[in-house]
Image 1 (tube, rainbow, N blue to C red):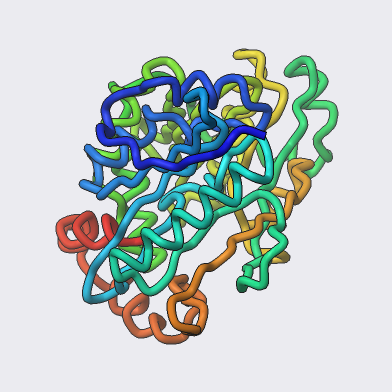
Image 2 (tube, one colour):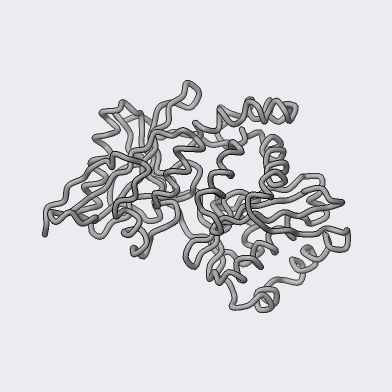
Length: 347
């Protein structure tokens, strides 16, 4: 077996042969690509550490994109990758995988981080702590819109139809819909008590990915009331960000949004729809299950410096309950002003 060496690629804007490796690897995702790293660097200002394992002939055998985050509020750590559900090491074999993980741990020590969060889709044979309370929710799509509609329960179909009777309409497109998307998204994030991601994130996604990024918006009385961003990669469509206005949910606008997203995915030839991650048996988990989505376990592994306890940087942590409650009470313009700088440091 050829010796494996690991390096940190020096230029976050250069592709080298990284993207060729991702494109041909069966587990390669959009988030492993250099394009996504450029989005993270430009929208969030993240400090990138893209690790690359090569054999003696210089061929890539594995990659691991890492981001370093540092703030007084959330601490000093690394993650692969923030915002997304999964983006662990992508390798050809165990030797390359071991090299990447060892290099990542050495890098973490040299940078003085407290921990590294590896968002894996598979369990690792280590004694590291691992979170298994979340799952991807994946729907295998039918061959046609009619077949997908027939697969829904009568209750779901009725909920999808209702907004139409109230005059709701749906539009899909690109960057021209970012204003309407963000109006809904930012209000919903405030209502959830969560700092909103910067608008520039969605602008950079649309700019970098072009037609692979799509926005779907539901309007009621000409006002946006539900919206989502779709990302198309290979045979999978994912919806990493979606929101609806709470006072309109009784009309089923969120149901119409998701049905419209499924329609767009089927029209583009997708075979799988990724609803995103949910905590097992949570409200969002049950919402996605009603569409026929099946849970696929996520394994978030933690390297911890000096035997520290695993982090709990999530809204379920009682430590953040008061902050969440206070955030929900902020005027929207205040939340939208304060949120983006804070969200840049969220994992």
